[in-house]
Length: 394
Ligand SMILES: *Cc1c(COP(=O)(O)O)cnc(C)c1O
Image 1 (cartoon, rainbow, N blue to C red):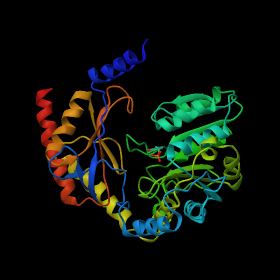
Image 2: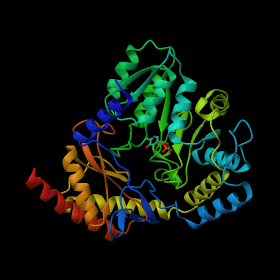
Image 3: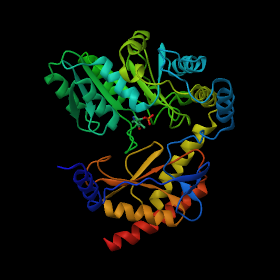
Image 4: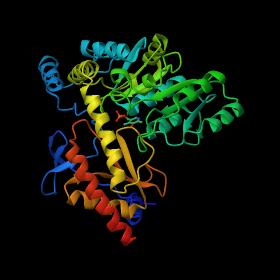
């Protein structure tokens, strides 16, 4: 097949299945008020993962600016060469304290953190047990490690128990999203921890969506489940969502972190984050730890959204997190709904396969501490109207 015909076929297939993806170009951001190229008027965004509205907090911006002036725009090298600054070091210390773990290691992205940990811990003689709805980066990490990927039904601990019993792998790792990114529900962490102990397996939690939002002072969903480093020895969190900065970390026993520095290729062979980004993260962690008002605001907005959705006959999924999806089913309708809401001034993204399983396309609404109740009320009103309109059309 020729290069050009392969690409043409790929794009045409996506297009004819309503699966072609396009990027909106953001031209202005002021909290949840954003402007997008090609769209007249401002939009209220309900699709960012900036759950606490911290990305534009003056303290983060100030910390980044100051560090930019001192260190320049880039770190210049990987952590093991000359890219590891005092800001990275301070950030790791804060993350370890915050999560109640011995040590933490900064990664450039969450995708790379997952790739790094799993490929460092496992090889072809091992198996990684993953929830069916895990994030793509955990699934891809399994491939990089060459370990056998065993997937269990979503949240189904009995199924996992069975699969662990059948496995003869040398090392066994259970890896789950703490809060599932497209569904918003929380993994049964306490049961998973018991099961891990029973089968002598290791437990890893990806807390991309819980860190900063849930648990004591925002320490995450592992903390809110009352679990410690002994129960969940591998904790991964991201810094580009509720923390409002960029990057990710793995926290756990000192020996885990020491081993990752030696073994994790997506850590070793990449340029360190700019020091200004690490400084912004440090500033954000201080705010999250010391002020509970943002978490309280987010919780209040989630509660308001859930109770008022019922008034507008909007069926929600089982989620208490900031991720509140509305299941639609087919791709065409979900795109039309997203478009309808945009015309009304609300930005809600349509999520389609392969990000979610076939037939489960959905609107993924994400709430932020920065939304007002009026924003949420208006979104629900328009969404209620849209659902009635499209139900009649279907
Ligand atoms: C966003 C996300 C990641 C990836 O993190 P990045 O820092 O954006 O690369 C990993 N896991 C989950 C569950 C996520 O939602």
